[in-house]
Length: 199
Image (cartoon, rainbow, N blue to C red):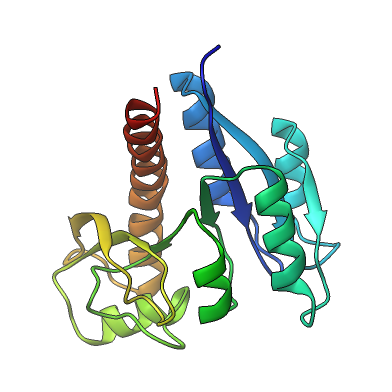
């Protein structure tokens, strides 16, 4: 029986889930031996639930901040999750949680880390800063998550020219296309590496 690489998604707030959809579409098309165990939401009205239903992914509401990490850890252990994928997850995971969880946690950042990273640098704020600084290039970075915002080891980056962009919104659109390519490719690569080691 072939082993599977088990993943779970974390999202928060009213995440739309475009990266989630891009990843799930890629994994289905490529027939990667990955099992998506569940998606965590922190609001019952999160639009991403519609995308989860489309792909038949179970979603679980964890809306109590006081017990969030404890409940999440129990779910990860019970489902033998090897990789946690952050997809629009805005909370900072505690150092205690990161030490207790034995798998890896990854995130995607809409800029070329270490530039334009850190606390409060997310979403349109990143693109607005990039535009204001008149950068000629931007891109996306997939990185491991540690106890400091956007400071975990970078796994992969993709760089794109943005000199032609006339607004932060244009930059956001260009970078999102890159995110939708890069994030699924990294997850597929990590799955193959894990399965090769655990034949």
